[in-house]
Length: 173
Image (cartoon, rainbow, N blue to C red):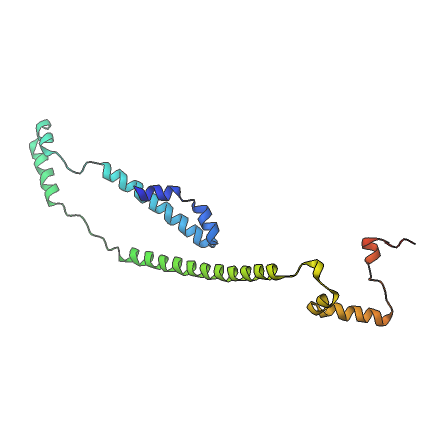
């Protein structure tokens, strides 16, 4: 009963989302959970049914005792048919192997992404504030900016194209 309460308490949609499972994996897991729930319902219904037949009750009610004797003989001679479930077990093992492989693949992707995010966070934390940056620092980070400025100075251009259109004229004269 504790497992039923635990399953009811789990928000599977949130679990699927937090693990970043693919659509195929989520669909397969949901189908498996549905089949499992259906099987549990059928099992509960069969468990609730009586398991023995009271033949003495039928002997007392029915006038034809031979019918009850035949039924009793059939019940005693009954042997249930055994089924070979090895194919189903192989299918379950294959599904399980695929699910485990997808889970490992997802875990690897999450680990790589987590490392990238930690590196980005460390970079952000170690970065200098914008106010402390100098033109030399910006030029060292992006040499194309330094080249563009030097090129503009050689050609005698002292304004940045599009600056006035974007920010307007800021001179007081």
